[in-house]
Image (cartoon, rainbow, N blue to C red):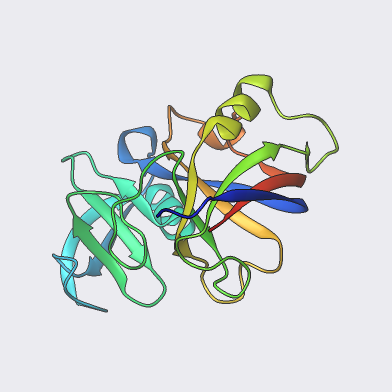
Length: 188
C-alpha cells in the first residue's frame, strides 16, 4: 500500500536562482583553468583550457558552464574544476532545470521535494516578473545539491533554472533573489 504524500506550507524562505553559464556570452582576458579531465577526480592539475575570465568567475559562482566546445566546465569547493558531458551538482548528478535545488542538509534533507507556492518579493521589495514567478511556481523541485558550507543558511534554497539565455543575463529578470517566499514541502 502506498503512503499519501502531503505538502505543508512553509513561509519566509529566501530563494536564489543558479544557472549554467555559457562561454559564448562571455569575453575578456583568457584564464587558464586546471583541474580534472573527468568527474572521477578531485583537485587535479590537468590543463582544462583557456576561457574568458568572467566565464570562469561565473562557473565558480554558479557551479557549471557550457564551453564553446559543448563540454561542461563544472566546479565544486570540494572537488575543484572538472570537464564533463553535463552540468552536475557536487555529488555528480546531472542538474535538471526547474527540478534541481540546493539547500543546507540541516535545513532541507537531500531528496526533499517542494514547490514554490508564492514568490514573495525581490531584494528591492518589488514583485518579480510574472513570467519568472509563474515558471518558478510550475517547477517540481527536489533537493539534490547542497550549498558550499557557510553559503546557505536557514530557510534558503537555490533553484536551478538551466542555461543563461544571452549576454547580460545577470541583469535580466531571471537572475534574482526572492525574500518571503512560501514553499510547499512534501512529507511522506
